[in-house]
Length: 229
Image (cartoon, rainbow, N blue to C red; front, side, top):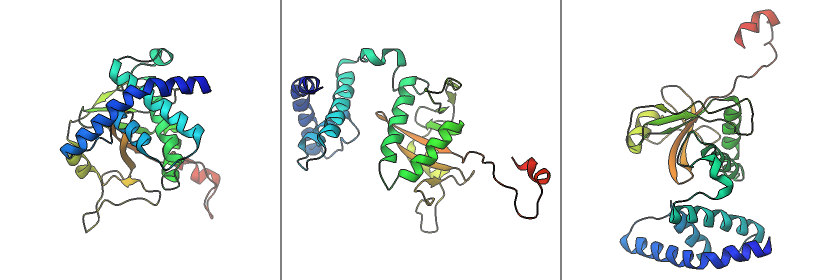
């Protein structure tokens, strides 16, 4: 493990220099580079705040792998059969989605929302939309042999600003309304939603709470509540 990490660190020296140059160029031009692998690498290596060594090594390895794919236009052998993260219908994309959910679960601010998203994914009610490309897919669990990709469906194309404005509920002051777990609320359906990155691109993620089976309400009989399942 140590030799592997050392190899990665040695390999990354040139990539880091390129990343630093990109960040410097972007900052000079007044633009943000926070959504790229190289800038993430630069930000992490510039950060002198310290942290858990194992965690930092894992994060560095992931960033280097992503940067290597971007620079070389190739996919590492271990993920070659999973397709591209840029393909919503691929296993690679669903792996990236699961990693995103795991990261959200690790933060106290987004833990409850991520858990709700995970339940929706397990129940087959988590949808991802790329408004710019006009693509949508229902997420699926690649570790569940009973779940498979439903394929990408077409939706109306839109820029993100208009897309979010059309779908999300706002209060009287114009601010987006959020649920207690931090998720947004769709004004047309009441479904929960989240907007963020999966892999290197932005996606709109929406879900409904999976159906639950509870005890009959007081004053009812099992037969009278059966049709509410």
